[in-house]
Image 1 (tube, rainbow, N blue to C red):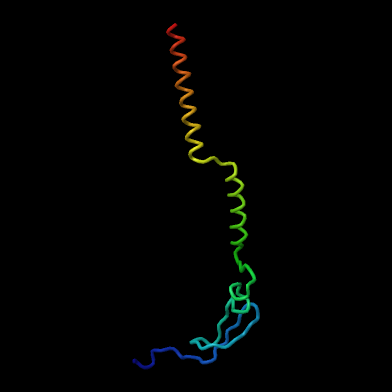
Image 2: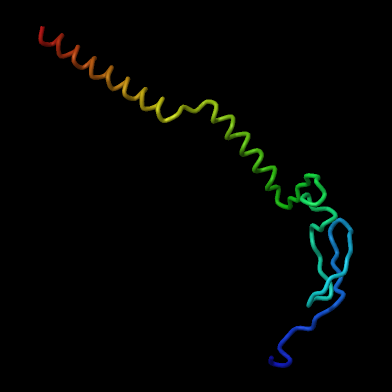
Length: 104
């Protein structure tokens, strides 16, 4: 191995979580700041907690509400195609009736 190219390894680097939990780990940094740790992460605690700095969760939930609201009023492709075919059939029928009236 080459000498003097590896960073200094600290046996006891301090990790500080946003919840206030502190613990020691080995790292090349002296101190590490994190947002979630094993004491506050939903996977480990079983509690659902949204960590949202840019309102992303609320925006997504609002978007899903709008989508569900609009989805109830929308029609599917089959319904639209059937309505279009029915309209075209009526137009052809009215054109043929107009031709019949003109020929009489």
